[in-house]
Image (cartoon, rainbow, N blue to C red; front, side, top):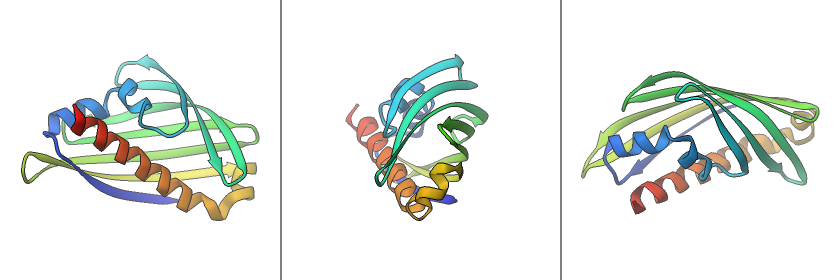
Length: 148
């Protein structure tokens, strides 16, 4: 499942970059995050995320590996998580560029693959709910960066 979008944040690129590469800040923006642990700074993180798709709820334990960082332009990461009877894998990229009026344009993509029970139970909800959660995440990032 291919997700993508973009958001303009009213802040300089360095400020947006610093926020988006701080796991503690990010954890407060991701819907359903229960815990984030830094395994290796700017390299590997472990976390627990609860996701609800309709009446089906799943708690994923997983890892995030930072594959590429080009400050303050580009980041690529890989995530893998397991829930009871299900697994999720994602490759995500963020590209940042200057926008008018000292703003930053963040363009993002995520290639997400969910397998197992969760995928078979709620396949038709997967795309709209995932896109909505991504939108909620970037709305929260925008709000927090612009308010500081």
